[in-house]
Image (cartoon, rainbow, N blue to C red; front, side, top):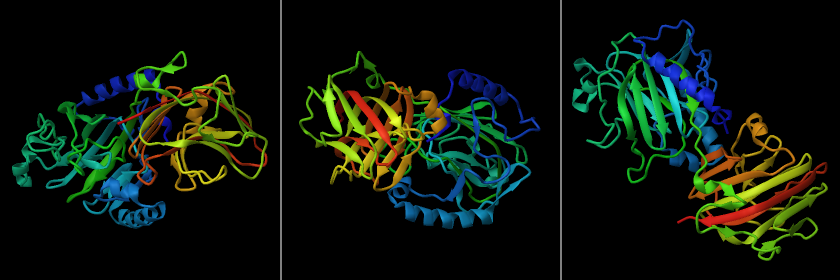
Length: 441
């Protein structure tokens, strides 16, 4: 998971105004490149390919369904291709018009992306948003022989949108002559894209269609890809500012209760009926579930007899101890109190707010520990809000989104649970209250 999700609003507003000023310029005039404005991070550092991998035109659903080992093999092969066709020259990321696309290691949800590019006659390229084609870059001249496809209208459009739909064609021709740098700014929120090219609005808040499945909306998260296709293209000043996805109204607790109807208290009384547990480790009193652990070689979970599929979940959590680690477990398939495969919304130093897949894929979505340290109320109550729908899992810690991932290799239903993590030197005192669940259609 990414620290840049945890963005101060003041920095974000400053960054937006700074970029607007930059866009108003007819050219990029600064001699210092690849240094991000306040509130942004540089995806390309101007020196090497750190933070990127190679991947061609590939269905992200198939990628996510692959085992980690198979993914590693495929990425290794693609990286060999990258090294043949991509170079870094004088702070510029250069592609010869062939090979795998440059693909971010990280996946992103909502964001503002800013980049400069320079290409050549008859080139055809673009920027894949969440691994979906694409914000178009191409030869806009008649000599490029693509006017019949809409190239006369210029770059920046959502070219793979359906014919006649909003965003399919650029609103104005904003390309600069070949040999000059172009500046593109893309705002991606939900499935809506807004694109400025050289300071001109070319796409205005248009839904980006899902190329891979026209019946579905755009994937909520995914990597950014720089496409290579038929001619040299150079990139620099590739900057990104993530736009935090706000906590929805249903994700807030007022007086220990969530807003709206349909919520069910997970523990309606001071009883652990319906839950498998070891009484020496787990108890409930005044609506607070407590787990205690004094070290050992085994995990000690408690888990529900009932299974849940798609849902929203609230949990207030507090943990103290030595090397303490615990978690709120979802979609688990327990075989014993020690062996509970499935997801954990993690608790513990270095793990707060992460999504872990126990006994399977391990870390699924990591949240930056430094950001978590700023969010967590040490030795006091913290709030998790978790949404699981299909293979898309989201999680907020104290109102900040820390989990935003599609993971098709996990189960789509299973038991709820709470964990006490094994370790000879661990001392754990974990508490859970305000536990509410609402099933989703």
